[in-house]
Structures are given as structure tokens and as C-alpha cells.
Length: 124
Image (cartoon, rainbow, N blue to C red; front, side):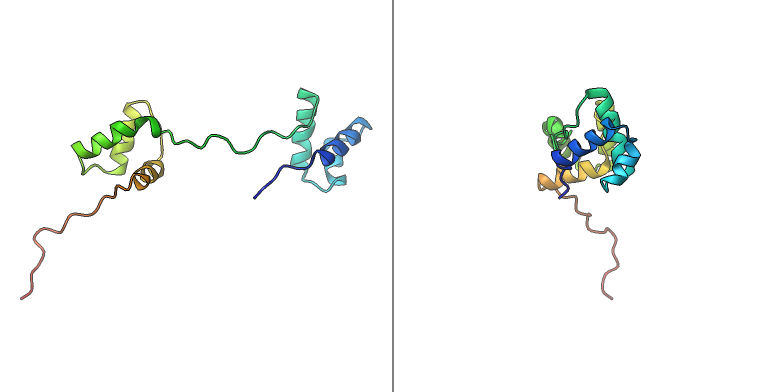
């Protein structure tokens, strides 16, 4: 799992910038990517410090608030496609991907099985 750079490394970067080194040169000197050095330089100029931002966060589904509506809609009209669910949710102001809807139904243990084929050829 990815972890933020140590406060010690950030402090050494800060000292190199204070000595007049460019952000890119300081990053190369500390063996971090130049893009990281540019971002740290920007953070240093705007906030005055180099504290790592919190990682992770709220990974709650946008569909949690729509759970009751979705379950009722499945009971009402069980042959809707995931794309049709997405379109109806968009009409309700909820923009989500088809995969988010898929994951929601999987968590609810709802699967959409194909109907048995009608007019299937029988055995001779």
C-alpha cells in the first residue's frame, strides 16, 4: 500500500528550498520525482508547510441514499437494464457509472438472470 513520504524527507526538501535550490533540483537531490518536488514547492509557497494530507476517506456509495428507491424499482420493473437504471438515476439527479450500479446490486445479492429462451428447439 502506498504511504506518504516521511516528514523528515519533507523537512530536508524544505531546507534545500530555503537555501535557494529549485524544487526540481531539490527533488532530484532527494531522489524523488520532479513532479513531487513541484507539488511540494507549491504547497510550501501556499501553506508555508509540507504536512502530508490525510489518505483514504469516505468511500460510501452514492447509491446508499437511493437504496430504498432502487429496491422498490427492481420489484416494480425487474427487467430494466443497468443502463436504464443509470438513466433513471440521472433523472433523479444522481450521476453514477453502470459499474457502481452493478456493485450496488451485487452487495444487495440481487442478480439479473437471463430468462429461459422461448421457442427453443426441442429434441427430435
